[in-house]
Image 1: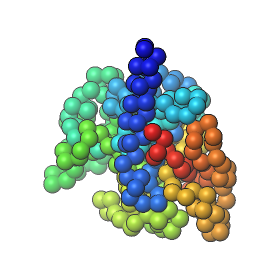
Image 2: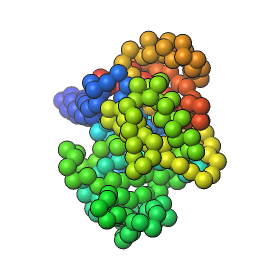
Image 3: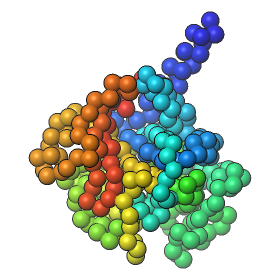
Image 4: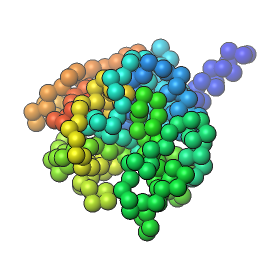
Length: 281
């Protein structure tokens, strides 16, 4: 009986996790996952679950552990990262939270440094790690394990305590990056506080300016970002026809019940494409 109860609990966790790629039915390409490199799995598990509110789940025959949020899954790999996100082409990832005051207070109580003041212009007033702009948004930045930078944006109208919001690139070629993701990923043109941006179901893609030369993501704490794609094999064929070279071509992964492919964008963003993360329940 105990084994049956444990099995049922495991199934419930898995269903809860994968039901959280809510945007998967809204387009052929949606956001899927962040993939983290770390030599300290426990530190990241604590940060993403206790600190940010993610849910632990497991996938596949090997019970690969992941952490799930609405519209994004977080994969952890035990590998020493070469550096944090700042200074790479993907400067940070962002979440919306219903209660930023409580979220920041919790992160501070757990010992995570809030770097909001150093990350925001003077037009924001920063008090207790939270930045507010008159007539504008309320945001905060936290530095997690291995120097991964996370932005929190308050939105009291969201249906969940925390939800995936955006990927923020650091680039001096924002318009070119915007055009590339519109062409190759069918993103919709947008803007983010005057910066070039694009939108896919479940995620905003912001291409913000930077005064420094950035490095590629592969090997760093945020090794790669992931998009969930319907009919991935055909999608990969289309990209090849457009001149895209894959680091790893379309591959079916039987142990996880998904298909994957890897490529690197022209600016050094390592990207995984998946098919099946939205229906592994």
